[in-house]
Length: 119
Image 1 (cartoon, one colour):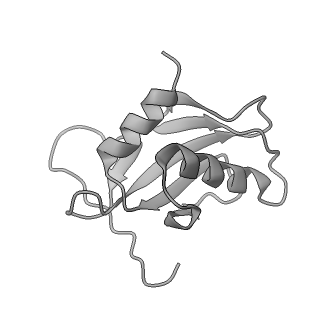
Image 2: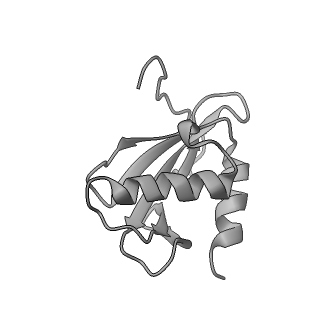
């Protein structure tokens, strides 16, 4: 992971943290995203919020990291960010994952994800 730190700044509010949290105090520095992945789906799509995470379906099976690669490729396309800016730092072998996405704000992530989620 290199010199990148994973300090997450939480607001001083009574709200429970959502599925997307800012990495630092500057706007657009990046976010930590909680994801629930459903592999072997008929298509790649954002389903919506699910137990404090965002549920995303991917076509690839959970074999040898294929679902992780598909998740990163799908989010890269959806968020218009390079694949290198998206890192899975927790949950490599689990459906529940935490991802670091550099160079984007919480508002940009939420706008892109909910634009794709069914109403």
